[in-house]
Image (cartoon, rainbow, N blue to C red; front, side, top):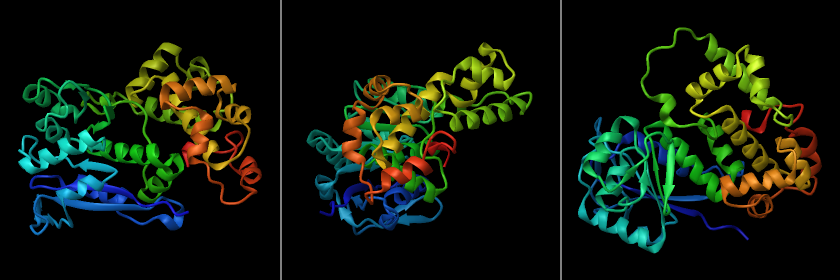
Length: 346
């Protein structure tokens, strides 16, 4: 049976950022079902659907639904703002409150967190915005627990993202969360962007220019090596030796560049590799764990529980849909994490 299209609402009102509107439209507004992506029904909702919504640069957005359509949405996205203190129309704030009370997933990109805060939806909850706006959000909405260095964060089914490109990260994560890693990867490939980035926005905060690009080039080569050898028992000492650094120096440089410790980064890659194998193949769980570098099914299960709040078997049941009965055999030779580029590197 054909699944109904996932209904996504873009909330529009004067002052929203054209970039965020473009990101939302690119992720959910393009039909990629011929490439295996799920079907989406993206609607632009506004208090007055007959009035174009002005945006900076002489652009305007034409709404196609009233705010009443939010009651049908599976996901509601609030774009960021050109002026981060722009007051949202009262009907928009009321509609967002009602949507959250119904249990609908809400997400805000960059300064869109200010809109959710105006609605009181972030009071007593954790949220993030662009690193340069953290203090402003704290000052104007002191009841919000502002997390300074995440790329995106969730609290009580409300998602917020850091600035600009982190909005892409959150949008792809929301696709991954509802439809699986392969669906997110398909969209990411068409956008020519990474399916996900690890780390925090600490890596993007302004710092003095590094004295040399040598360390950056070296660490990039080490990460590429790790992606091609995820099935091996890699250690920080192994990676540091490959970079020609002490373990302590390597960990410091690695974290500064990626926003994640080497062990955290490795775990992220292994979880993503396991997700792809679970989606694309029918390989036994111990073999999935081995290829993804977890060593044992028990270890893989523990990490899935702590990071994804699910089990590998439940994840496979939700997202595995081989296109033919030979998918497992084919994937076992062509999609192996060992001896080929990592699923995450593609």
